[in-house]
Length: 330
Image (cartoon, rainbow, N blue to C red; front, side):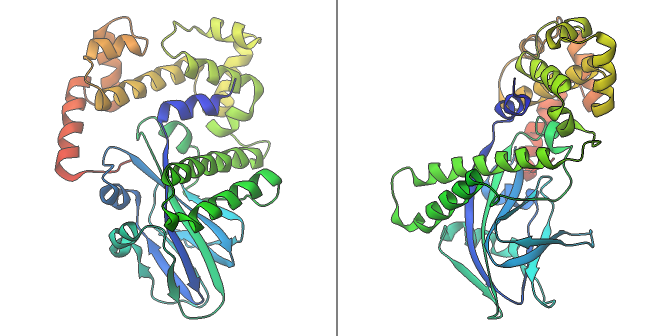
């Protein structure tokens, strides 16, 4: 069973490619954060993940407030899972172009090539974003650093993916039926492929959710819990399905995720509940049953411990916040 696929089904990723840039050194740009992107994209209830694919040249990227820049080369994809504001550039320091102020214009112009810089060496970048549920996405995004980079040119599948994205962007002005949907799916595949490669590059002793996914027993247990979260799981039932003892499963689970399988399941059920409270009109009792609680009062108590508010108040405040200032929180 593939736990990453199970989680991604739940978080409902939606992707898009929105920028086709050609920069000549020296250049520098400050890119907007998730909140600004969410507001401009009118996806106020979603978390926005920003990514950039370097198709030619080189440069650097760094999250604001973090001094150490990450070097970028052709074939690199750099992702900002938490949606932090960040700076990208190449060459001697220059005053950053403010991407936030340009964002609405960029979105309105589509994928026509946008050129900036001082006339030196070229860096070509294709930029995109993913939207996902802000509660459920914390499961895997919480285990990622604020900035991550992988290269997709080191095998045939990555090369095919890059070439497909470049071809789709280069033909964007042809207005072919379904072209936007194709680019959206390609951007989703690109993001998932980045996660897969990042998991594969994790050091053997690394811990956290993504490292747990890679572990055969813990990964299988996670897949079971995500595939059937409402089932009446016990540690014994999970261990029996995985094929190891309860003590070994508990020990390995704690090693990677710092909690027991049942504690993890409880937290995931509550985040599923939060997602349904903000995206459906189901009653609290119906949602409680959907996510595996036998009674509405027990769901209410657990939900308040996790989020600080009972479900009904959480729903009303979420609706009020979306209507007031359209946040894009994570």
